[in-house]
Length: 221
Image (cartoon, rainbow, N blue to C red; front, side, top):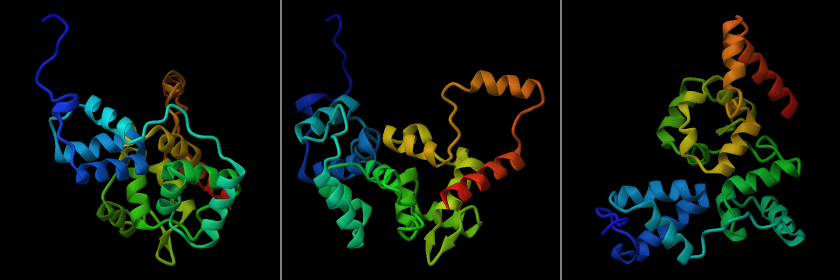
């Protein structure tokens, strides 16, 4: 029949279990729809993105627009931070992504340094890589630690100096926007400008990138 597609399970042909639902919820809260599709694909590689999105909608995970932060939400956020709750737990309680919670904290003037830096596991979840890889970056001094936590200044410098190490396109839109704010190169409309700069001999080199990262770190401090 014209217009019909075959080959991939869709809708009711996908047998969702409580275990898969929990995997979907956790991945969605951590990194949005892309992270959720990636997590489910590890268990059910033939399931289509449509099936994952449909199940997410049935579980109440899909939102067209991020909910407005109310005074109650902000007060709960600040109380949770004072209580040393993890960002993952705060995000779960507020029904938001970790990236959304991080952005709100930055809007309120909080930095990773004031919160004690980042755990290896947190950076791994943000970048959608394994904790072992983040540990390797720390061992190679790409990321610096203080008190066992990765500092915000070194994370910003890492984004500027080594953007190719991050699977940027696979991250949620919230996380992409947050990484850009932290220093990740914004290439959304600068390809022509960058090409012109290169042709004229003005392309940024490692030294200029390092200088930009150092300036960004001083501003954060």
